[in-house]
Image 1 (cartoon, helix red, strand yellow):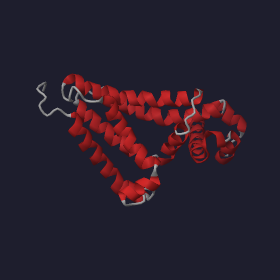
Image 2 (cartoon, helix red, strand yellow):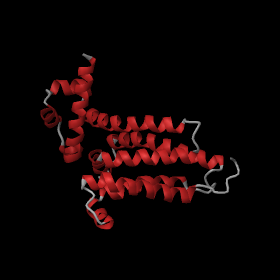
Image 3 (cartoon, rainbow, N blue to C red):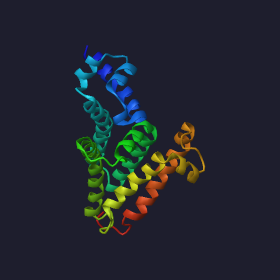
Image 4 (cartoon, rainbow, N blue to C red):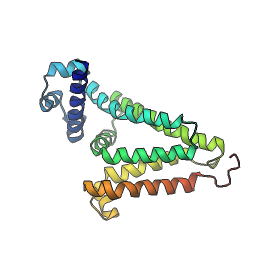
Amino acid sequence: MEKDKTDKKEHILDVAEKVFADLGYDGASTRTISGEAGVNMAMLNYYFGSKEGLFLAVFERKINSFRTLLQNIGSDGSMTPWDKLEKCIENYVERIIANNCFQKLINRELSMNKRGDLTDKILEILMVNVNEVKKIIEEGVSSGQFYKDADVPLVIATMFGTKNYIVNMPQLSSIVLGHDIRDVEFMEKELKPRVKTYMKRLLKAYLVNEHDNSK
């Protein structure tokens, strides 16, 4: 019985993610979502309470799964700070390339420059994961593996900004990259490895202190 409830909630969240990505928060309605999910409004309201509750649940589901992964990486005492950051890059690129619908959803809502309770809640959810990455970089700085004058906020902006440019500006980035980034096969087989290699080389060259004497 519990599994049926979980499966039903996951199905509703899958449908809601797509509808919100296509129509935006303001354009989507719980009635549209319930209709596409094949459930009645009473069930949707029972699980999520309101459109805002459903919207935030979509965000939290995606962000929480990555948060657990980041926390596990960050707490792994067998890895150096660079090893941890490298693993974060690997997993981050896998997720952003594989979840264009969710990235589109984030970009749509945050690019509208609205400052309200909903936007604040979205930013709060996103910043938890940003801070997990920040802690790893700061660990590298304090341990001496990363340069002491490393600009941590700009490193984070580089990681997330590269994603924003590629995923959220498909027409322009397709011209720059010389291939339609909406081509799923290209994204999977060529773009993922390119982005991972680029991010690792760029950040390693900027961050890693090759004269670290703390080892």
